[in-house]
Image 1 (tube, rainbow, N blue to C red):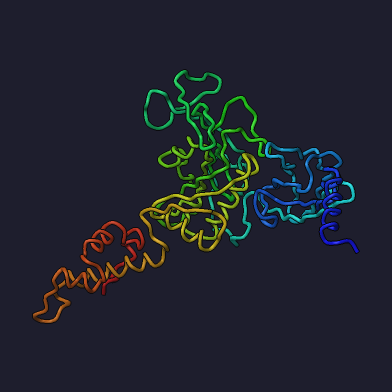
Image 2: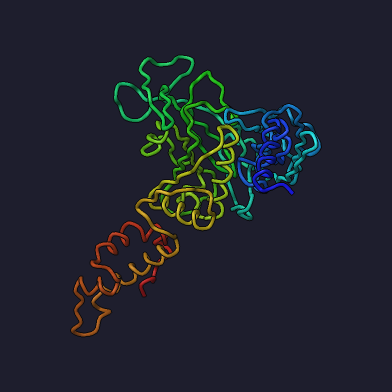
Length: 395
């Protein structure tokens, strides 16, 4: 029996003699969905990666038995990826074969109009003008904006056919300096409006496999305020203002969906679903994401906090401001404010000789003063509970 050092040297020699092709052939082949979970695919599309291969040579990919190999290519990151389109409703098998190696993944496709996991959708529901069907589907449209070199704030309209001469430059997080031109995509998913924006160089191609180089694979999601429910399509929160403007200049994509405007829709399941579907659309058309950050105030903070809690993975970080963590607890607080103030302001309800000082009122409410209760009662109570339905609420 050879000594241990000699055995190790022999094994190293065998490894050194193996060709790169032989080593590649020994690796297992894999199939994975990059645009979301394999069981949560929507709108008939999925960005798919074939692992364990370095090119499409000798590779065959079928989807539900049909050859889709031409959809795949080697991307700028060296991975073999492709956008699989035309998936049928329900389950389909994606099979990749390279030589003697093979892998199979079953994906489940859901309607573009949803639902995926939120359950029965709100009814009745009125679609936007221009909808192509009763599910509010409508092709995406695109517009262009730019930052001017004159130092003015905000964006101006940009016409690719007649470009202005005062376009400013911006340098992204990945060190690319490009004209500060933004393309805004607007469309409808999950029966409501979405928007996606990114730095875009007009006239140059962009695909998920080969994105334009200024895209740094980061995403900022904006959210809307308040808490309520509408029975019709709305407008997605702004994605080119404030923090979103800064993020765009640094190479982020920005995104929003009307169902994540809490004043338009305050249901955690449908809010999370709309973000999952819109992120899927973004990844399929723009490229994979390193991480996603949420931002928003008031109802926007509400959406971030309860989605992050109930659906981990939608965000990798959140930036909630003017924060409150849930809708029903806050509504109950408004009601408590209204009832206690109604008592404090009506001396006929007190016993003979009873006097309430403002500090005593605050002590009962559990605050350092009654100012917050007074502001909430005048500005917010009538929003939470319509006043024509509150007669006798303090009785």
